[in-house]
Length: 99
Image 1 (tube, rainbow, N blue to C red):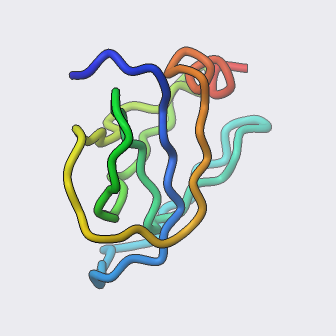
Image 2 (cartoon, rainbow, N blue to C red):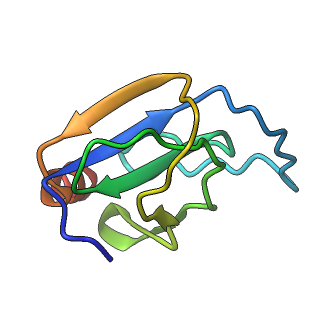
């Protein structure tokens, strides 16, 4: 896994079509609700364009920690669609989930 200067979170309208067995909603205290949709986390050291893919199922456990989140290494792609949210580090993302 890369040690990254930033974490890129993409909420995309993907080119590929994804079918989910079911839409799973986790209500954990006041934590955000996640549905089976095209959302994923990318970790990268340099400026790259990323291919959109679908997120793994979030497993909600005690203290609002999410397990089994699929992370991706840097990949080359022709284009990206959707909103890019850049966080300073993975720790910030982790803290926001923990709180």
